[in-house]
Length: 230
Image 1 (cartoon, helix red, strand yellow):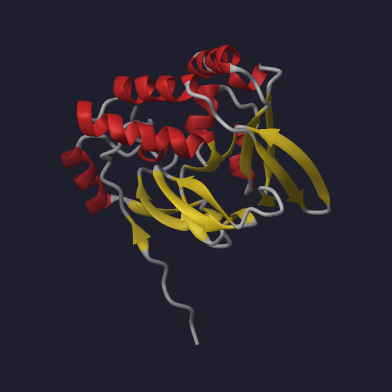
Image 2 (tube, rainbow, N blue to C red; image 1 turned 90 degrees about the horizontal axis):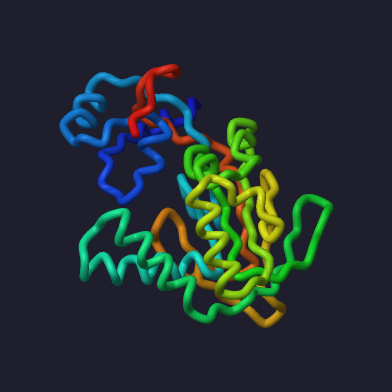
């Protein structure tokens, strides 16, 4: 018996930063993107999973989900734009934030970590723009983890500035590594934790498992080598 044909996926960009569509050369203009859907060929694209839930750009726990919730609140008041998103991020970072105590298992290795946030990237453009050296690992069937050491408010703002300048990965307070699968436990008594997946915030049971999806997404996109749309 033959396996079912893969479902083909198309994108009409409507987000704030549109990292997914920009990475794959999909036009921001709705008419142009629609025309592309009618003529483009499907190409395999890597998928990330968090407890078997799909994410395409990023997923995270800790400070970043809070940042997304604050950003949505500001968008309702002031509209959807990059300046509003950046202002919301600044307000979030100025607040007091708790440190997570994480146990991370990667294959036969494990480590303990205190961090305000653990960010998992599955988008080359986003990781490249903030200056994470492991970004090319996405092309080798891997995801990239980024974590911050515990720091105060002023150092946190400095890290935000370094990210805007594309130099976050060079900071001593930033840890990053590539992987195919990791299991994350946030304390022995923590049974559920708030997570973010591609801009949505939800609660998941622990441990949290981040991994590369076994099957790709088949995306309608321009042919390789075409100029990316920014």
